Image (cartoon, rainbow, N blue to C red; front, side, top):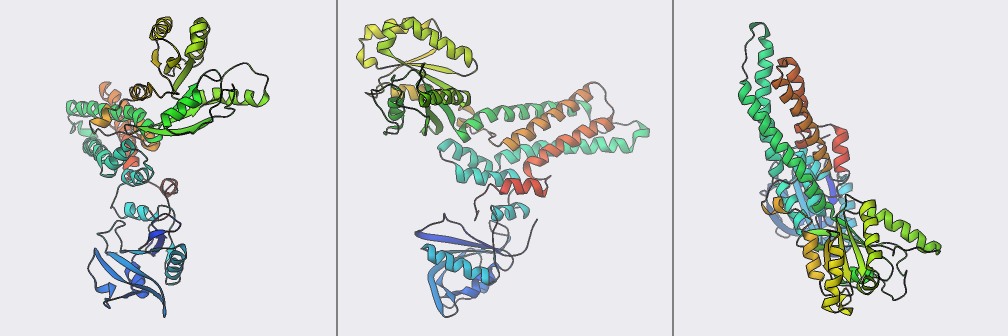
Length: 466
């Protein structure tokens, strides 16, 4: 897949801004850049040192397009491992287009999505998991996802996998050597040490696999469905959590006819709150569609907030116990937080009586006034308690990539086969097959084993210019 042609792309977001950066990479990148650059000190870019910055103008013949700064990075000491220049120009979309069109005429071609990072991978500057972390870093929108992406990009995950793979490869070599001396019936691989290695690999793989549950939550956010009867204050709660008027609030029951979603970051963890249509019996066709969508959103949510009206609860507490049981029975695997809203309308004694009524259900109970914004911070702390951030705090490797997760599962399956074969006295030639499969899945994570289709799928999701 590696081409030596020079590629060009806008490295900064499209549109007008203060400045824009245009990136060129390839064997002739500096030569092409030099052909359109006129230094204010008449410098020849071809004779300049790597990692230097030069002021001048981009010219198209006698026409001056812009005053720019040009950065030079000579391969292999560049991001892509190739000769690279970056042109920092003024952020006018017209200037950007004029410079890129000029560079295309001078011999560049437009870069494909993620092609700069693809070249970095193909030139050995990054392994595949580090390259994928680049995309995660760009898309990170909270502290936790940023921390995980940085840890992976620095090679934390790769190092763990590479170490396990190297140790397994050493034993695989000894097993293969035994096959060459099969007639002599000798053992080069110490079976006790091999069993200890397999146990250690199995332990690490299980830890990494288990971390995916947390990693997936951190990367994609936790979808939280806010449900309840009409007019209990669901939209008011969403507005209070977001600290903005995101949803329409009205005394008229059934105002929310569709789901409203927004995200809030609490202590570095993203939560996607879904304000749903009120659940009730209705003949209104539009409202009925909204209620149907409510149940669809509950299916997708990882956490359910059931909002109850304190005044209504005071009158007919038993009815709400039935409603709670319905949700628990319909979605038994989903954590449920029951929130008593509008407590500002009740006395503390009334609130305590209601609490006692509901505590028999052994649920997570919170009391708030969404309108007065009391109890909101306590609710945020409760939401955080559902996320196990211990691994994150301890800076442990956390898996967030579905492709890595799949390869880890397959590698663990093969390691289990090797372990079983070792314990049951399976012949070396059959064990060698399973060891090779395990090594294959390890290699798929870091890119030591790859193909064009896999690389195409991964880098197609990158932005142009990265």
